[in-house]
Amino acid sequence: MVLSAILLAGSLTTTILFKNNMSALITGIHHITAIAGNAQENVDFYTGILGLRMVKKTINFDAPDVYHFYFGDELGTPGTVFTTFPFEGARKGTKGAGELTYTAFSIPVTSLTYWKERLRKYNIITSDVLTRFGEQLIRFEDHDGMGIELIANDQDDRKGWTYGNIPAEHVIKGFYGATLNLRAKDLTEKLLTQFMNYKFIAEEEGRYRYGTQGKPGDIVDIVLDKSGRQGVQSAGTVHHIAFRTANTQTQLEIQNILMNNGYHVTEVKDRNYFKSIYFREPGGVLFEIATDEPGFAIDEDEAHLGELLKLPEWAEPHREKIASRLAKVQLNTEKYV
Image (tube, rainbow, N blue to C red):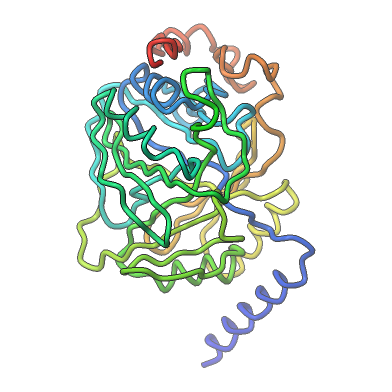
């Protein structure tokens, strides 16, 4: 009884803290990171076919012999960046419970036909046009089996990016949201709504929607899969989803709130272009809280983002060895007109 009272008091205190803040500690999705297979195929798909900009080519800081690619809008604005760890020869994973199964990108409301035809041109099978919460979308997979959705909507004023191979009026704007496939929702819903500034928006056919403001770039859907098989993480599956916070101060605030409410949160990790903390949500999906600052232009000119292999300072003495172990990759966007 005493323990219950303490936990309740902690929850009430946290809720009041959020309400008293001038701005939310978490404002939506920062990036989503997937595991991939062949590095060149990965670059070709996301820059060539989907038309995202390669904003950074670096390494997995925890596995330096593996690339870390960042694809997004012109500057890699938080909320637009899909990142990958390409492991050459990795077997394909399987979608299942305890995973982020579909990453949704936002496209203009009039662009579905264009994208269906473009994907068909490159032999990518898409679903029929689906309707969800009053909006139309298509669903497909990349070369590794990664689940992707394009959701057509008129709520997104972000500019997006094009190398010129996709008309500006049809470009991907950034993330729309993400689908978490879980066996239960209550504890994850508590995490999102009590400690991460998310609010419940609506339910439709077993899909529960949450958002910070309920707009493209902050949407998280939970789909219940009570008896589903556990997903197997490998190529074509999501490694983690990162949520946005403004700076290191707000990150420490959310870290403190999470730790005080029983979540096992890592120390702050310096990822050069943002700082990160990590923890598992109750359903098993790896969550990250990443700072908006400092961004991807700290070590490359904005006009030349993603052109060179950039390494963290601690890896520079080993540049020659690291580079020799990485496959050569290049942009081939001119092939995907």
